[in-house]
Amino acid sequence: MLYCVCLFPRRDVQERANSYRKRYDPQYARIPPHIKVTEPFTLADDELPAAVANLTEVAKGSEPFTLHFHKFGTFHPTNNVIFFAIQDEPALQKLHRRLYERVVREEPRNPFIPHLTIGQDLTDEELLDVYGRLRMTELNLVSPIDRFHLLYRLDDGTWTVYQTFLFGKEC
View 1: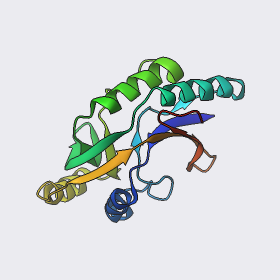
View 2: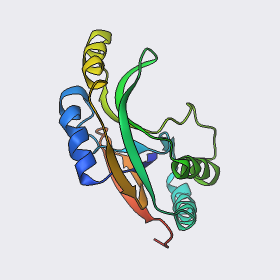
View 3: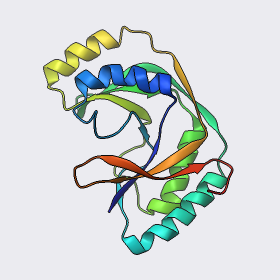
View 4: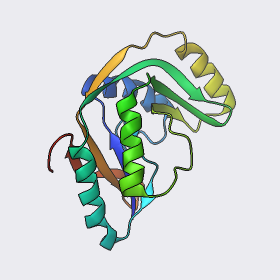
């Protein structure tokens, strides 16, 4: 089965993200606004208990932190994605590294650029038009983070939470 570790920002950040996602993200209905800390990875059913145990250990060794969404960004021309950019947060980078060391156990396919997607699968013209307007818009959102979530993908492509892991605690 396909899994992923994500963070969900607080409600006001999700509402602001959804105000864009409804228009610009065809994946809007498949998963709430989120920050992917790992790329999707496969686990067999018999590997899941060890993965959950390792996730619990990573969570116990993590401290809460705050994410600051400070501007709009894009991956264009590599990928037609628009996102809320996250100001450098060392704790998030550390969490990413620990999850790959303890759970995913393979090298990430792409560099880790923390972000919250608000638009994807746009044509070049759409992306340049939308991003051209958004980059002039002030963005200053903050979200405390005290947990991460293990999600799994259903057959219809929807992602759902398998388990939540609180920082500094046993789950």
